[in-house]
Amino acid sequence: MARRAPAPPRFPRTLPRGPELWTPETSRWNEDNTDGIFACELIESYLRLTKGVQRGELVRLRMWQADVICDILRLAPGTRQRQYWTYLLLVPRKNSKSLLGAGLAIDGILDEPGAEVYSCAADKDQAKLIFGEVKAAVEMSPELDAKQGGLLKVYRDAIEYPSTGAVYRALSSEAFTKEGLNPSRVLFDELHAQPNDELWNVMNQGSDTRAQPLIIGISTFGKKTDASGEDTVCFQQYQYAKKVMKGEVDDPRYGARIYETNDRVRGFNYLDRSVWEQANPAYGDFLDPEKMAAVSRKLPEADYKTKRLNIWVTAAKLWLPEGVWEKCEDAEAEIPDGVEVCLGFDGSFNNDSTALVVVRVGEALNFDPDDPAHADLDEDERDRLAVELNAGLRRPHIDVVQAWERPKDAPPDWSVPILEVEEAIRQACRRWQVREIVCDPARWARTYQVLEEEGLPVVEFPQSPQRMVPATQRFFEGVMNHNFTQSGDPRLARHVGNAVVRNTSKGFMIFKETKGSPRKIDLAVASIIALDRACTAPEPEPTPQFFSWADL
Image 1 (cartoon, rainbow, N blue to C red):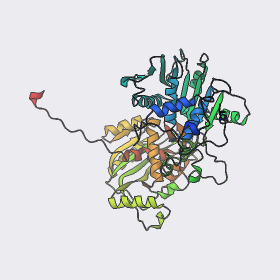
Image 2: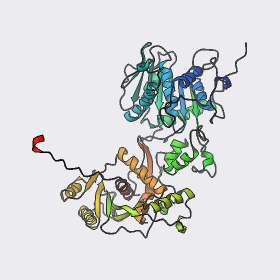
Image 3: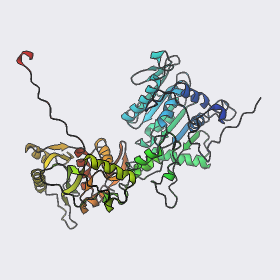
């Protein structure tokens, strides 16, 4: 009888990567050292790609993907019991986390009679995305979908294996029941986004009666600390995994695969393509380097580091790379009277500042291919701008109308001159054709009501993550890709430079460095919301409807 090769080490020094396809014959994994062979064959036999041009085609696992699955389902030496009860998989976006999660969820449903499989997310929207991915994979497989004669019945919020009573559901940290859960397998999607460790602890403690429980945290990196200043649950698990890997903690029931970028080297530059492969096992395969390069010009530095390179960041990071704001400056550009604009307003009464900015809708594109000011643009950027110029496309332009900041020698009872602010808004509306006055409804409700009663076009823009995250992203992309110009106003430059980004459940948005910081950001906030609305096509006027009396 041929002797089986030993299982790969628990924590290999070099993690597998690359486009090589998985085959059982060339793998060191076998049915004596892992339950993952069945899971890999299940995925390749029944799961189909749910997105992209290859949608509907059966999945072909890479060797590194199969290695992760086999390691997660590794058997303890000399037994038929699985090695791990908890597993941490940290890998950047676009490296098939959703595919691996869906495959492990379906494998979990088939794992034992009465299995309870859960995928956990930070909020309801993310939980729906996870469930939708698994649901789509099942419904696209005739062998799995009961409606097509397969094994699994799909419901609105659950997937069931009727012959064994096994079930799969998605939970969020916003709404879950601690009572009655007996999970056999749990997949935590984007563990870094969990607001605290409550759900993690509940799910880890709820499977004591299961013979082979398995909790899998699948995530990118994120911020190290939460809103309270404590380590996030993801960073806690990362630190613990590192101790297990180094032998500082003896925990045979804890496994991990961590793909990360080493940023602790002299001269490290996160935009250097030579470092991108470290954390991305699919780099150069289905993760296109050119698309990563395009993303690097769109995401804030902290966002790109955490989500695409697996580099931990603190709760707050500087927002814009050095020098990029200045490259958008066009001091010669003006906003003539009478043109269409959006006004952005962000205000407070006393300890902060109040800002009013203007964004021209459709500033003429100011690009001369022979202008030395554009000499530092790469060839692709120059070509793109040249095409836009020839097509007659136009870019917005941002300028400061007025700003009110608390003077350094101001008395304790200083406050923003409200009537002066209101009059400045009226004068701006007389000067330009104002499409919208974009403002946060908090604190200035009386002023907005007065202006609305005068017939001015006030539009509320609450500074919630749902609104500010995409608006901040659009502004950042605009800066990085020179999609708008700015006047060079030193107050605006200072406020933009003062802004830091923090990760919220919806993504990155800007904040002051601390709540009571004297470093103001109101002009930056006003510019973000005004630019967002200026780049959003206005809703068309409703078409009048006429009815004949006979139809009524």
